[in-house]
Image (tube, helix red, strand yellow):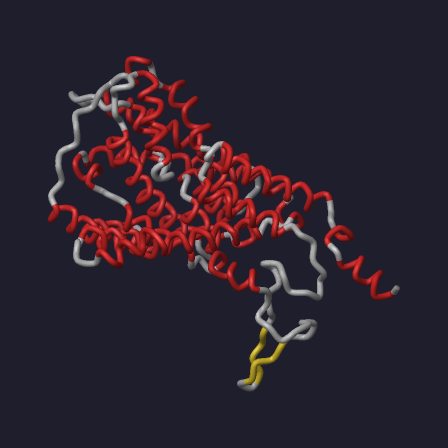
Amino acid sequence: MQILLKFLESTGFANLEIGNLIMIVVGIIFITLAITKDYEPLLLVPIGMGVIVGNIPTMDNVALSVYSEAHIAVENGQVMLEEGHVKWNAGSVLSLLYMGVKMGIYPPLIFLGIGAMTDFSTMLSNPKLVLLGAAAQIGVFLTILGALFLGFNAQEAGAIGIIGGADGPTSIFLSSQLAPKLLGPIAIAAYSYMALVPVIQPPIMKLLTTRKERLIRMAPPRVVGRREKMIFPVAAFLICAMIAPASLVLIGMLFFGNLLKESCVTDRLANTARTAFIDIVTILLGFCVGASTNASEFLTKQSLLIFALGALSFCVATAGGVLFAKFMNLFLKEKINPLIGAAGVSAVPDSARVVQMVGQAEDPHNSLLMHAMAPNVAGVIGSAIAAGVLWSVLAT
């Protein structure tokens, strides 16, 4: 009977709290949105399942969660366990996998894969569109001011602000360096808003543009030569790294992946980086981020504020890109369609697809996708540089 009672006390049913139940429902909602609405399924399915796994109650003396880390001390050259640790191990399997998130290992690997699948030729064919990717970063810096106003310290505000770049790996990387305690809420907020790009952006785009502006047709982009595409990753890396040395890891991996693609002599490496490799890292990153959302750590006032600020940041970034495109048209003879400014947030390629969708709703024969990819990939570079600047300025 004692064994039976002890077993019953150890079950998840006996230790389930209302917070765990709420988070399990959130995980199910993520999976449902991914399957039924096709909202970023490659992200929301791993994250949603991770949320469910991370909120199954466990016993304190059993190392299972991402927070079950070993405490190891070194004394006289020998590895010693600190008092209070139950078993000789390195923590749970999940905690070991989560180290890739906590130490900022997975995001640069994601950037390697992104670089290997990105074609910068549309940006190179019309360099002025880079400005739209830069303009969209206004959401990052305005959100920092909002976070400071709400009582977050400078490091936390910087980590929260980068959500406006709509770049999950960058958000995770920066928060792991500046505000590790907020990593879970920031990561979930960033990926949630990336998945909701088709919901959030169109109303803002339509509100800030007229039908006449949405009907603007742009000239086809020029053809970019192979030599130009090979030189670009090296030249762009040197420029970006000199401007923001702290962005070196993210930018370096992004352009390294692109060099593998454009050099045409490392096809095997490029194909691996943009297929199996990035898929594996995405699975680990998404699942571990989800598993870190245990209710006791996640359901806090700070988390709710982060979600609110993240939504504001994303909306401001979208509006900033659109409004800057309208501003550029005041000085351009060949007008650009201001809808492509919304692609300045670095949710690649979803923001560009949304631009295409909204544009074709007005004119089914107006193709904006390739034009929108220019500010879209510029936004990836811009968010990484913004993260580097914030890290160098705010690091203690």
